[in-house]
Length: 124
Image 1 (tube, rainbow, N blue to C red):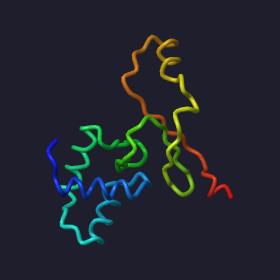
Image 2 (image 1 turned 30 degrees about the horizontal axis):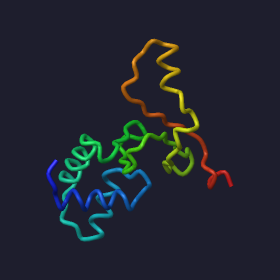
Image 3 (image 1 turned 30 degrees about the vertical axis):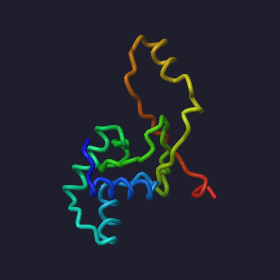
């Protein structure tokens, strides 16, 4: 993937907003910073960054996709109250893929685990 100033701005914005934002959320931040990046350009670049493994595109949280700059293996916890998305270490279930393969005979090529509940801030 070739270098692009717009892509760099988008990636920097994503890295500085670790709330697993949607494209619309990123777009609002870029508009406030007086960026000239259009929403279509933003979507195109987010998809290219995800396709090249520089970010993760997370579908299934809401109607809009969310984006994550953390490409290391991890799970997601979504608070049912505040709707924030948190990273959860894969260490909580380190052998889950092997167990699935052993018990089912499936071959797992990738996986995304999303856990729902109430975060500690909302619990208090």
